[in-house]
Picture 1: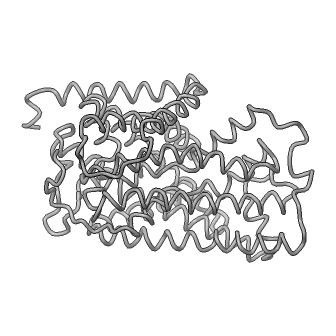
Picture 2: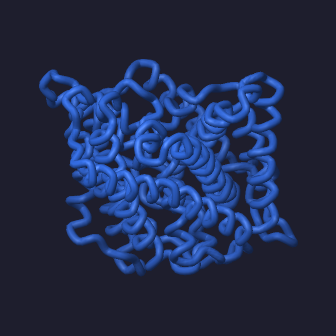
Picture 3: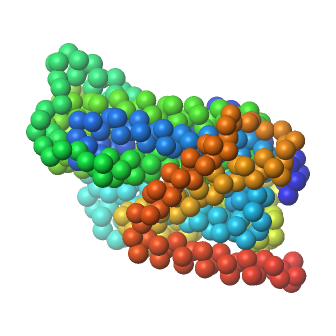
Length: 436
């Protein structure tokens, strides 16, 4: 695919819409539960862990910023790997990326029903649960089917809606903490010394909390100005998420003597300065955040299969564009159906496991693409990262440091996915593929 090649898609994603999409893809369910997990690892120093994780993921995002700015087509990491290393590498990344986005979306659906159970306990029963999942996925499928502008509008609305209760919590909690001269109580953190392993585990968990941005660079065929807007959106989203996550963690460890013992730290902390209404507000905020995250997945993930179909790496019907709405409607339908099935058949932990593991390999491949693309496309109009190859090397080392910790089960998921991608590559190389 050549830069600037018309696809029939509408370039409707401006700078701030793209920024909102990246934020929406990062801020999901993790912030409502991870403060307890991170406090369990490093106690009162847990806010610092967020800064360390942000520095690590910032290296990865800087590499994404340069690479993404060079492309005006849909595909994201699949397209970058294909251009840098060829079709085989591109398909391996594509399948891992698709798996990440499918399971992440399914996990959001699973967790949505869990939070909803606080207001409607019957949703935990099979029939109501399936009905809720059908409405959740079905509504977003219809919205995105009917146009990228409507899908982007929904994503923008949910981004604002999810940030409001989190920002309000951070501000109100910070003021309350200062007024009461509260400090992190000794009973809220482990008494044992914080080891290097504690720090590495905390950062590993938080790398996944900052993840999701890789999906937001997929729909570049519908971005108005990828060259300027992709780097701006990535950096702005990282800064926003880092400040928000850091302040929330400070409030949690400063107010909760039992932060480690609960899986709903924000709700318990909010009760201290807002009362029972605060618990309800945070619970509603979690529902909004989860559905907003799902809306972001619905907007950008179908563009992966669209790009694969357009390149001849998937059957061509995946690249079909609706005559009236100018959307990849068949890719949207397929994605919606698979997400619904994974959410209905799986569970939150299972979907998160698969999503988290696959992401490491995608990040490493994009970092490796940066110096290769500089050599192959020296005159390409692009944002150029200062000392880019050094950032790429640091990003690869950072990902390798996390990969070595994977279990046999996690490696099995990756290897099976890669085997499927290999079979896809064999099919794509056949001259007969044009008739399929």
